[in-house]
Length: 510
Image 1: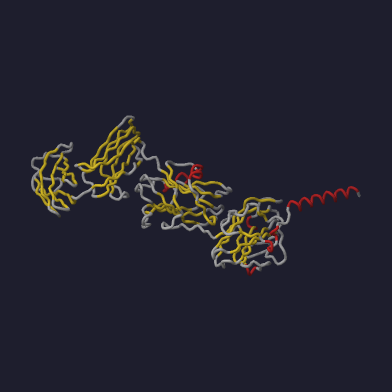
Image 2: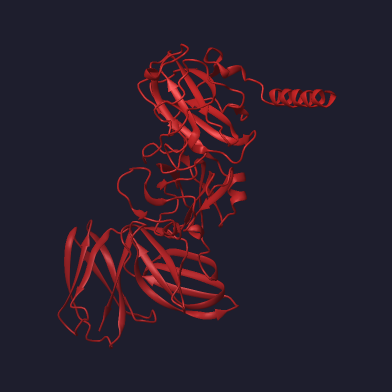
């Protein structure tokens, strides 16, 4: 008899400890529902269904319940609508209690269009289990439409324990949806960095842009950000705060070095001018194409828009967009300048060292976007001393002229310099000579002038020696002159029209 009494006392102590460990929560009954406020942060991450029972009349198998016996744990929340479209977001933060693992399919969030207890199944306006969107992404999101501003709504969190542990979670309601999917209404500015950064550098020095509500597995988003490069070539990157792949609060970096990143299921991007938001000038259909985006105009504002999809087993909460400048030249380029001269635009560049440099392609553009090669200059291969290079563009365009160097390695790799520009005033236009190559007699020089003026025609040979000079009177409009080149030896020549308010030049061959 004494032994039986001792066993009874032990059982009482054990049962008392279990009861103390799992005290009935205050919001077990919907009449004591906890109030949530719109756009507040996720409610302290210690909410749980443990100790919450189901009362008579409480829905235990709503429409989103997958199968089998209904919920046996339930807690309640309520909120007052601040907009017609809102969301309820429930996220798993941990698990607790007896059992093994967590049964994500037996965890639900139900929203009712009434504040009255007990709500009926007919009052359900949204019902989600964890696998309603995504697959085991450890969150539920109820997207609500047609709400009445000022009305109160109930939220039920239910779970079926069985042999599984119970959820610990946080919950939030909001109406501040992320809406920045167009060039005209971007999210903000991307962060500019001088070189390829680490995740830690990006997250510590760049602004974060939260996705509201969080992006669940299988969902897609489009977001736009402005940036103003100081170079013509950039890399664009994106650091994502997410649970991909299956790691709570992990960081994943999306950039050209992680083209196979499991943080996303699909990706595409576009660039367009911010000033007009008219017409895509650059685009790509994968992450690797975000590397070495060329042909941008330094100092011009652009808008970068990306579209991505999330894998089914994780969610994304925030983004850190950034851009950086690639290592441009495998040479130490210490200067690159453009100067107006009587012969045209003189371009000079100097290198302090070179490695594997086959040749330079000198490229010209009138819009800073589309470049064409105008000269090819042999490089020094490998050099450790100062080298100077020079080339004269004898036929620049009127207005802004853009130039860049493309350094070509012996192995075929290309590397781009910064773009430089020069404004050329050209009152003389339409300069041409026919035929070209010229003959001794009967060559016709054509030039269009914006006004009556005196000009000097100067012809230089390939080494810059003056071989002919004469003065001509131009009328406003088109002018034609018969040119005699009988005294010129065979070779390549530059013909320059020199005037007090501008020069114009062409190259011809005899």
